[in-house]
Length: 292
Ligand SMILES: O=C(O)CCC(=O)C(=O)O
Image (cartoon, rainbow, N blue to C red; front, side, top):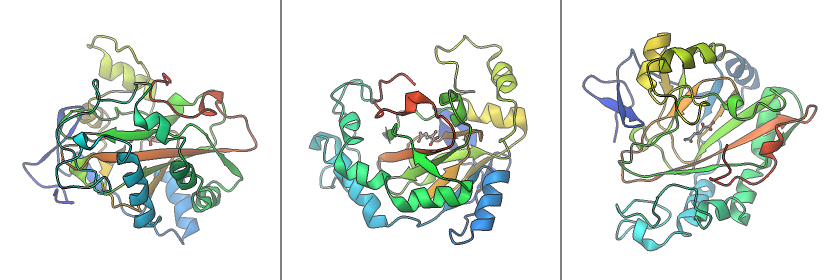
C-alpha cells in the first residue's frame, strides 16, 4: 500500500502519465470535522473541497459495493474473493470493458433500489444545505465510476461546471468512494487554490502543440503539466469506505489511475439550489453513453 506522505522515487499515475510523488506536486488534504459548520463553510468557499472521514457508515458503503459487483459475472473477481471486496481477476467481462454498452450493469445499477436508497440519504442533503446555506435538490443524474488495475484510465483535469453549465452555478458535488480507495487505487485529487483559475487560458496553453481532442471539455489529461503550468500542487488523501469529499463546481480536479487489484468504485452526487433552474441534462438517470 502507498505511503500517505510524499516520498522520493515514488510516482503516481493519471491517464498513464507519471507525476512525481513529491511535495512540489502533492500536498495532503487536512480533513474537516463534520460538526464544525463554520469551518466547513469557510473551507468550501476558500479551498473548494472538504474531506469528511467516516461521514457514512462503512457497512452501508460496502453493501453498495457488494450489490454492484454482484451484478457482474464471477469471471471479473479474483478467485477466492467476494463481490464485497471487489478484487479484479485480470479478466474483463465486457469488451470494450468501459461503461457505455447498453447492457452494462452500471446503467441498471444507478436505477436500483439499493443505489437509490443510498444516494437519497437525507444526511448528505442536510450536510450540503448547511454548507450552502439554502434549500437544495438532488440532481437525478448520478454517475457510477468503475476502474480496473493497470488500464491507465482516469478522469482528466476539469471543473464540474463545464459539464452542467446550462443552469444555476449554486451547486455542490459529493464524491463518495464505494470502498477503500488508497492513492494507488485512483482517488480524486484537487489542484490547490484553483477555484478562480482561468480555465480557458489554461486549456489553450496546455493544448497548444497538441492535436485537438474530440471532447474539448476537459482541461488536460496531463496532471503534471497543469501543476507545472500553474505552480500548484495536487491535494490528495487516501480514502476509506465511509469517507466523503465535497467540492465546488469551479475547483479543478481529476483522478489517479487504478494500479491495484482492488477495483476503484465510486459515485458522485450533486445538489442544486431550488431557487434557480438547473441544467436540464442532469434531470434523467445517468447512462455511461449519455454523451456528457
Ligand atoms: O471519479 C471520477 O473519476 C471523477 C469524479 C469527478 O470528477 C467528480 O466527482 O466531479
